[in-house]
Amino acid sequence: MIVTKLTERLGIRIPIVQGGMQWVGLPSLASAVSNAGGLGILTALSQPSPDALREAIRETQKLTDKPFGVNITLLPSINPPDYEGYSAQKMGVDFLSIDGFECAGHPGEEDIGGLVLLARAAQELEVPYIASGGFGDARGLVAALSLGAQGVNMGTRFMITEEAPIHKDIKARMIASSETDTLHIFRTLRNTARVFKNAVSSEVVRLERRPGGAQFSELRDLVSGLRGKKVYETGDPDAGIWSAGIVVGLIKDCPSCAELLRRIEEEAESLIQGMTHLVVRGHAKL
Image 1 (cartoon, one colour):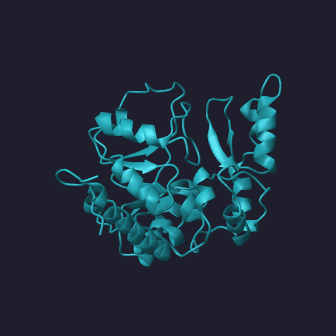
Image 2: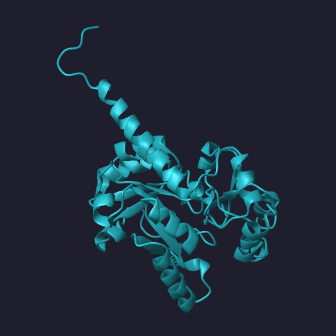
Image 3: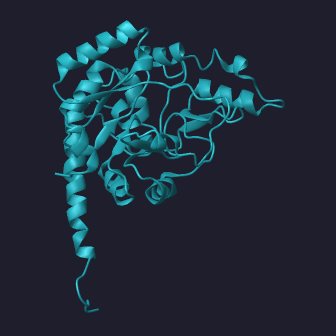
């Protein structure tokens, strides 16, 4: 068993958190992740009203007696915050989730990869943190722990599980893809988002790169959240945009959440134990 501050404080068995994903973080997936030993997450943005969110919470409570969380969207300020403001730490959060450049969704505008960003977090932060962006297997979990994280946040990997509320054709499309099959949109608007490469996201990039660029009002219909929802419901990969991280290139199957977390836990323990031979006490004979 791998024990970290994350597992101890949240009462979970495996230091893995399910990412908060619109249209994906529903009771079926959140409860499956929690029942498997991780921390399942409901996504408030998937619900049309506060009452609907309350009902989703009640439904999840019926499906699991394990801890789970709720992801709530906070709208960003118009003026970008100080890069080194540490505002969340000052407000006394219990954990921080550190998103590297590899992540799906919004990676920020500095393009700093997880290897450096997580090590910087270890240098600067006083509160424990979770690694996010590019994680989907045991190697990633062990690497994150070695960089000082107390666990990992996985979004894209959980999209390709049996319990994820996504059409099987989209899951198959993602399994067949590689780490080069994502795009950054909204670069010119300073609101960069990493999404799966398809006809719609490619058109957004084309419009942004034309002379004079593009205003969000010109892109709004293409990037509509309801169009993205249709992707998951109908299996049409070009119905809209959907988020995906470059870890998609590592994903080769669609297991249940229980099988996925069991596999990661066992393989991570094996990797950690297998590295003990790298430390030699005393003087080694060459």
